[in-house]
Amino acid sequence: MSVKIGIIGTGMIGEEHARRITQQLTGGQIVAVTDVNLDQARAVVERLGVEAQVYEDGQALISAENVDAVMVTSWGPTHEEYVLAAIKAGKPVFCEKPLATTAEGCRNIIDAEIKADKRLVQVGFMRRYDSGYQMMKAAIDGNRLGEPLIVHAAHRNPEVPERYVTPMAIHDTLIHELDTFRWLLDDDYKSAQVLFPRKTRHAHSKVKDPQIVLLETVKGVRIDVEVFVNCKYGYDIQCDVVGEEGIARLPEPQSLQLRQAGQRSNEILMDWKKRFGEAFDVELQAFIDGVATGELKGPSSWDGYAVAIAGDVCVKAQESGGIEQIEMPERPAFYA
Image (cartoon, rainbow, N blue to C red; front, top):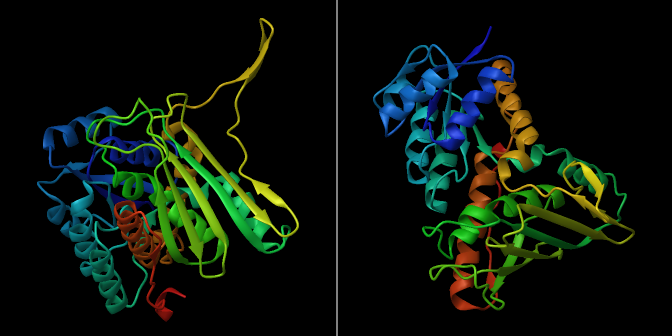
């Protein structure tokens, strides 16, 4: 029996998720959609050829009797409202990042979920499902490197629009690394600092680019992340974990190698959709399977909260230029 899913927000990522569930994955069925632009929602239903009802708003969709589970892919500031409504309705909910736009909002969701006494929320941190990162996780957990000491990483994007401003390098870009490193290292953050090298001429006036984020974990691991969102040459994600006895490097995406006209070359991807396409498939299939079995196992509300706290401190560090302390509350036993 298929899990009947309602999607709130039918923009680019919402339509992508609907397409995957309809055309590539198993066990799920899109039965309801809504968007602030209802014409767009209707157009998505028509393009995908699904029999889905278009609801006036997210609250109506969540309340619909034929909706078993909810996917929140709307504008970030609406996430908290819809996730809380889904929890109140007792329906599992997949929420794209961010879980909420403030740490306080994330905490509200945690409190509601604990009160419901059941894991109902999965947060859309898809890198955990990427095969390369999973190989790195297995190497670290299997003690093949010894204890991790240092992480070198980079998050590069060809370009960003004018609306992208300096804090978004943390809340929209680094947010993925902030979750991934907590998961890879089984560790939390202790401090953050943000440095600004010479600014690229390709960056517009409202964003400082590139940035270097320096993190220290509770266990003492030092992490440096280059965030460069106007690198021009491609979408490039790099990660090296340096351990006592070895180094694990994130594999490059598979691509065709050409030997031609005296040169050897490989294609570099230009956007996140191709780079993490398979990870999205695995992530959404895990959510569907978790709903079907009544047990969600993906990134939790607590993970969303931890990233929000670290992200807010990183933005503070952007502004101060100094080392800022990150104070994480004790993890509730509910999320152990």
